[in-house]
Length: 483
Image (cartoon, rainbow, N blue to C red):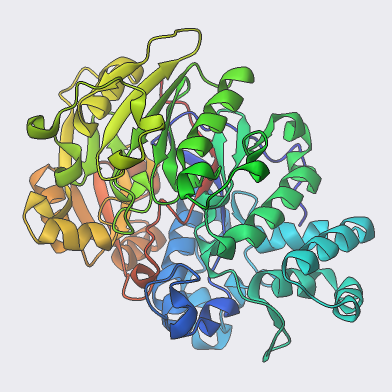
């Protein structure tokens, strides 16, 4: 099945509208080749056990997405899919039994489909070989490789089962970081780390060449370096133009939050604002600077949205700290490199010279709930680790705040974050383990449409080693409007 432009619609105007289509990438063989000495260079905290990650964790994610987004692909087949003799063929993009959904879309499938065009195959192969310093004979060999196999090589770095010809790109499972859908535009990101440069290259080729995106080519926005960046001395991260999808949140059709973090620079935020305003994508952008620490990485490790009036947040960063409140110029932090460890929030509105300052993350999120999403209920915050030290920091590290909303009030999170789960229960949410919920769907005991105010717990022993939750593992393409 090849997606075409009539099948795919792009529109994401919130974090919580009912999810209708998204891009994902299932764990590939490259993940199983990450070695301890390179783990942190490749942005992993630890090596993972690939089969456990696939069978006991990520496969549940795929099945759940299909029940919510494309039930015809899975309803009535749960026993068949999970049978030992099935050998995971349901999950393999290169197998005839692959689920092949046009709503839960596998990046590897799209890549293989564009590589069927010889011209595209030669150009992309040349580009990959250039950034990976391959020799000419290898480039010619790759040019003559079958598109399905070549797509696997570009992602895993492996030629055949054992021969590695360049590094894997294990972070591709965190598909949100390659791009972000903002209304009917896609912003292609510019990663901070060299380990992710091939991901962006593949994403660019897919978005500009796959027929599914043909109707949106003019709506694809690319972050570029600031003018004459190559003449500037020094290697400071703030001087580079970087932006990753975990630092971009579309909270309403007219409002985007951009985080400045360990991975997204001030220059990257500035260039994104220019693009969004010049192309009239939104009229309001809030820049939220969090401490540049590996602990936080992106803003979606600090907070995500659950309902229009409910957010899950890390309390130690979200609350106002009057002892360090600054009366400085509201935009001074764009050039003040000494403020890396402070949380600062500046909101820009197109056509207005004077930005607005928010004292803390809670104030910003409450303002969004009331003024952007028109909530008439009190804004509520569910805190990581139930706001109790050391559980707040421990569970934030394992992505207690990094939740994906399948629809308003129904979110996915890791089962290991016990105190955060308690906080959800205290806030009136139902909590259910994914295996139990899938069986209930299969037996007809409930439906995705019937679920309300529910935290779905996903197994996480291996996935959490990679420092990313389900918000990271999703690139939404289509959500229902909520306002």
